[in-house]
Amino acid sequence: MKTVYALIWKSFESDETFDQETFQSRIPQLMEWLQSLRRDGHLVACGGGGFENHSGGLTLITADSPEHAIELSSGSPMNEIGHTELLVWDVFFADLQYSEHSSRLQ
Image (cartoon, rainbow, N blue to C red):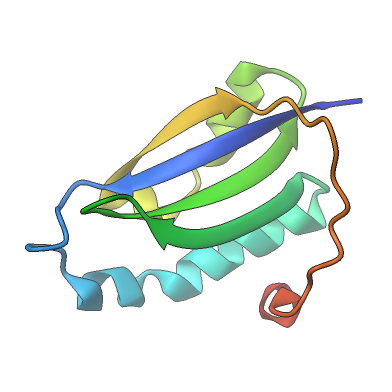
């Protein structure tokens, strides 16, 4: 089984100075990147959210190595306005039945 990696994205700007318009302009490119991860069998799950005072997101992917995960993460258009950290995600249990927004990745 391939290792699961968590790509944890956090914007450079705090919520006070975060440019929502710039963020929204990257959403189509973000969807293309996520679609390519899914198409190539790497996407496990993804979602948006935030930290205490910064926008952020989490993408779970499979990859053959940390270097491969870093290579895949480099394709995110959000890296231009934030930073992505890599974390090995030890999956102990997963029943991924929630798919309400999966049509966005079609």
